[in-house]
Length: 349
View 1: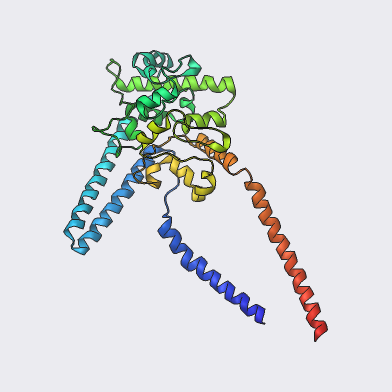
View 2: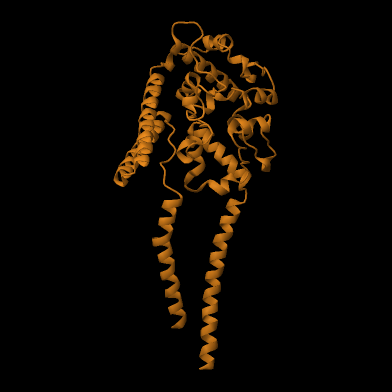
């Protein structure tokens, strides 16, 4: 009976921890956020609305305190939230006005050269080599300029149009770049024709055609190429001997701090699909971060996270199996230990 009493105490304490303390700690230290949404318009508007709702509640709380400084700060925050929601509503409305079905890859090819894209971006699969190497471009712009050979595949059409039209809005770095600090990639105002939207559609069609040719040539986009195109301009993954492209000092100045190595990120951060949500919308997970939205579509984001798991947690399945084997072992051990105890005590009595 004594052992049974101890067991009951352990069970009760575990229940208190599980239903009382743990949910509170999880809620306070790890607030719940919505899952990654690959419709970036819907994601941005929902996030901006959440910020507006939070700012409204904060103002109500400030008013109840009768603290003029708190009320002023909360009022300013509410105004910022309203402006942010309106700006993203207008931005995505502009993007929706672009008829991407009218894009022509041939016109896009000419536009890629005539609009100056080739001055910064390489498109190696189409024969456009980089104007400068990664180190030189990072020293000029703060971060290495990406090759766009796979861009038409790893990003969806609408996101490509958004990042061409206004890269700062598309990657959600409004708080970092503006009139005082310009983003390395300028907004696209057209290349001389009267229809800027058609030019954007042409560029998207061209990037898609290049990526389609790339996939036909190589069957797929490898994990290594995907990591290079999506992450390696800012991040190491030393477990796979891949290092930041370009000048780390300039990158640190550009970002405000040195971006982390991603070797162990899958084990440190991927509870509740954290990495998927971070890649999809960094501002939702780390408000104020200098990390831009990566913008990958769902297929390639899952491939990227799978690659991080393969490199950073290659023993995951083995570890999980060992856990099951250990549980079975202790169950069997417990049964035999109980039978042995009963036999010993029976002979003593």
